[in-house]
Image 1 (cartoon, helix red, strand yellow):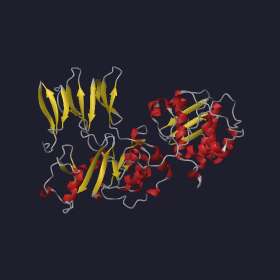
Image 2 (cartoon, rainbow, N blue to C red):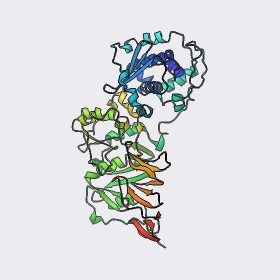
Image 3 (cartoon, one colour):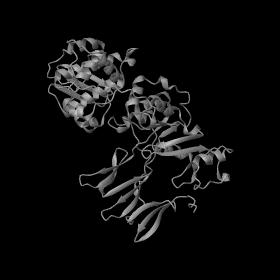
Image 4 (cartoon, rainbow, N blue to C red):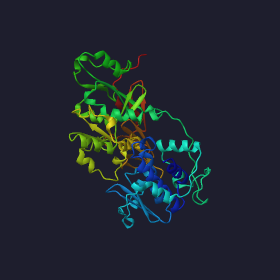
Length: 486
């Protein structure tokens, strides 16, 4: 396995059909090995499938003669045919570069079907056939390669599309010297919790399956795109002081709601207008899809899972439903719930299959006794490497230099015709060609005002969003805060 890892690291990106066959044969050996009882301690599916996807992407953009590729979306298989040998890999990750050329990857003129050869059963023989030379390496190189096999990161764009960097042969007596080798990254000992926002991905997976908003009394949600914390407390009938203290966070300007207006059993949060508001049961899931991280201490836990895990759980629990953060937050579209059959009908090229966007709608507490450790290792590896999705709205600039809004990784809600757009909370301030401003509601996907303001700003003294129109100041939105004491 170490020899196979050294071959992949030294030869990627390939410069010939021969070096491509060496890499693919090595990945085939690793793919066979990871299924052994000891295999997961040596290599991860993330490395195997990730490098197979990188090989596919490289061939799409910089094709080498003598290599045929085809992506079968129906069976989720990537085929390679090199020097008369067909090698295939299931469920490779669809990186953005591959998604952009998905039509080329599925070109029916290059269609391949399985030859019927089970190469994983003869993986060592195939590897020795492709790489008959002696593969020497030092203890330092072995340590680096072992680290890479367990801690995979997609190679840089320079490595995928540019020229590889030189790496010492270290006694390697393999293919002709014209093959250029990649530089292994320096080994960095990074603690698990040193990811953005202090996220522990293992804890995130556990929280995503065990946290239940219908059966939780006090928790802190987090919206990552603008770093907003949203405390939520359930009123029990005798925790009024604690509830107000948590929701107001000691801010004396927030008006305390009278206790007699609270309903036992309901969840309460602070609204964007700075008012203590209840969360109706119909909006429980919307609270999670809009703020899909849970904060516990200094850790942030993503409450979304991958499509593969959603299908696995829906198979085990037929009554379980899921929502998708790529469409659930759109208030002008009917909310959709997904059971197993619906999950299976998600298009194979959809971003919903490769991003963490699925939240269990577990009102009946079906997952309360589910053992996260029972998840198949391949699904866990897929989860650990899948991209987090939290930036719903992106300001984009067109070739004309003007700005628009791209939403939910799928469509433009505003075309690129505006000189300036500012996204704040769930609204956007939009300037037109006459330098007039308007307010656009992102969730409703419509303008709340016309282009009538010369300027829009927040006035802390009045606790209000103000606009200047025709030389007069006007309150655009009023926050329910007490006036500042003088």
